[in-house]
Image (cartoon, rainbow, N blue to C red; front, side):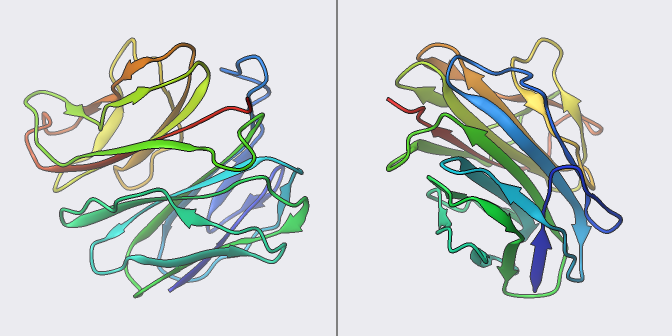
Amino acid sequence: MIVLAGCKGFFDPYGGNWRLDGGTGDAPGVGIVNSRVADAITTATTAPLSIEAGDLVLVAVICQVAEGVTSVQDVLGNVYVPAGPHPATSYESEIWYAANTSPGTTAVTVTTNGTGDVRVWLLEVSGMDLTAPLDITTTNTAPDSGYAMGASVTTGIANELVLTTIVIDGDVVTGLQTGSPFTAMASTNGADVAYLIAPAPGTYTPNWATGGGGTAPRNSLTAAFKPAP
């Protein structure tokens, strides 16, 4: 399966639309440039994407476990690589990223092994490390009672960008728990992705409210990325 996703200021009836965050949650030197959610996709969809020079583009994918992402590409030649492990229950979570991006209008192409349910979230961030932005990735697939705890991550320096996924077998995510420092992106089919510019080194845990009380196995992947030195 191939999914094409994109862009700032463009509405795509098959894949949602870009939101310009306007600096919400920004830290000195680090800024959220664009975010986008592609709803549950079973056929290809296209939208233009305007990437700024030197940014970090993050692509979070949740899909049925048999799908699996084989590649993420764009026509500008930016190189997307996976951020570590791919935790799996009946679903799989993946995070891919491209550092120090070349600018221009393009589309991000997510290619998977099959034609099942694929959900895509994109986040473009400025002010990040240009050569080796990935700091750490963690996973969590264990159930909790009453809520869903995502994968915790311990950052090493100030203003790291933390991106986290959540999908629950046979249950739905209804939002972040009250008081969470994370910012949730739009949910699709009961799954979600959230991000945080972590102000200081420390351990950060995304906690989610669920429709069924959080007792089912879940799949969460969290990755932390370093700002420019």
